[in-house]
Image (cartoon, rainbow, N blue to C red; front, side, top):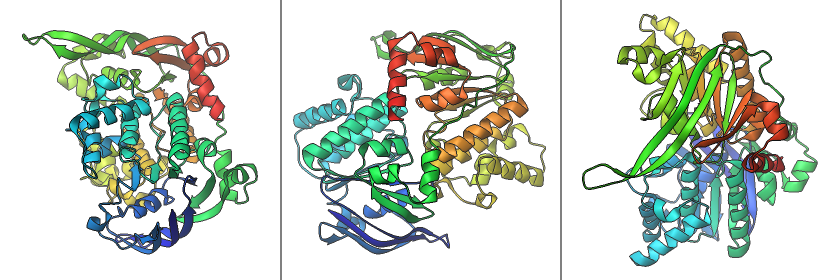
Amino acid sequence: MLSVKNLCVKFSNSNKYAVNDVSYEINSGECVAIVGESGSGKSVTALSIMGLVQNATTTGSILWRDLELCGRNDYEFQDIRGNEISMVFQEPMTSLNPLHSIGRQIIEAMHAHKEIEKRHAYIKVLELLKLVGLNNAEKRMDALPHELSGGERQRVMIAMALANEPRLLIADEPTTALDVTVQAQILSLLKQLKKQLNLAILFISHDLNVVSSIADRVYVMKDSRFVESGKTRDIFNNPQNEYTKELLNANNMEDKKSEQLSAEKLLVVENVSVPFVLKKNIFGRAKEIFYGVDDVSLSINKGECIGVVGESGSGKSTLANAILNLVGYEGKVSFLGKQINLLKQKELRKLRSQIGIVFQDPYASLSPRMTIEQIVGEGLEIHYKKLSKQERKKLIEQALIDVGMPTDILNRYPYMFSGGQRQRIAIARTLILKPKLIILDEPTSALDATIQAQLIDLLKKLQKEKELSYMFISHDMRLVKSFCDKIYVMKNGKIVEYGKNPVIFNSARQEYTKKLMAAAFNFQ
């Protein structure tokens, strides 16, 4: 189906190759995976197939069913993109149009390649949304992307990619934003489609557990080159390259929970509910209300890390937004004894330097018009105006070093980095203000296992040195088990179970909690 030979990609603003002499093949009905750390060149390799690499020189051969793709222009790609070859991108929020409903966007993908009646298009979209497991698909077709969780948006992207029944599906980190239970469903779906439609899949991931369950063959990528390749079972059972061994070992998370906990309350959430008005009557009053968060109470002590876990759409991120006073809510949120929603604007601004947040989608949270220096140092401009230019730059450079990024990137822009690198930049932006509490909303979902371990080490080190507290929102039960002191399990906007880490993982009472853990550790 696809034959790539001696592919080289070099960006105009770089002296190094993003992809260097890469060759591989994909057969009909086969799943081939490319794995490696963020920045290794995986996504650039995939984008080259679709002719989507900009400001770069591409050489070599990309042969699609006897048709040479290398060197073709956008017009020549029209019949191929989204039709014969389709792609699921890494970041669903930036791939979806924020002004159009998800149903309209999937129909648009179909109309681009074939004529279809409105009624038939509606039925097809509904089938696709149900196929990828979107809850209440009939009611959600008219929803805008921002009304969906990260995992739900990713499912919409997969539905859109399948709309025209492509021969090759390029899946660039397709399960990054998904919780383990939905991840298992999506992988099962892809395997089923591969078998039924004889679909070829190029699967790009940093998650070796996922790759082991779906790929027929694996290519391991490091610093723009393939360092090892072979059948999946051979790579996982008998790796030859030291880098491959390092990636496999990185999946074994060590226990990094706090040793001593303070009894001093930092954050207290009491009976918080977040209502969303679905329908209004002719007088503009709420007729139908949906509670994204329903009567939730929790607390975080000084120096403590709590984990908030649950499937996508369970209300985890909505709860975080309520704590930050970013959405209207009912109930009470107190930080250091002060009720947040009663504070005046000046007091609230001062408080915001003490509560930081790292969002799930790093590309959407970083301004594409600002340099890395401006992004990381933005908080200093607001909260530490008296700093000299040299002092400010020194703090920015140190923040980048702390998250494992080089200091020579200050004048670059977010689009020049991989998903994992952008997330590290987002974390540096939060850490630079030295907050007392950091809300981590899926902070490692876009990162490979080795970088995950490094960031967890960094966060725990800072927690110990600065007595930092964390609210760790995640669907990765491995990380939650190794990192969090207390765990709150959310389902449908409610806390269904909570307790200390060992109690939850050793003797969970709720079937839902057991289901989450079984899905996570069965992947192991």
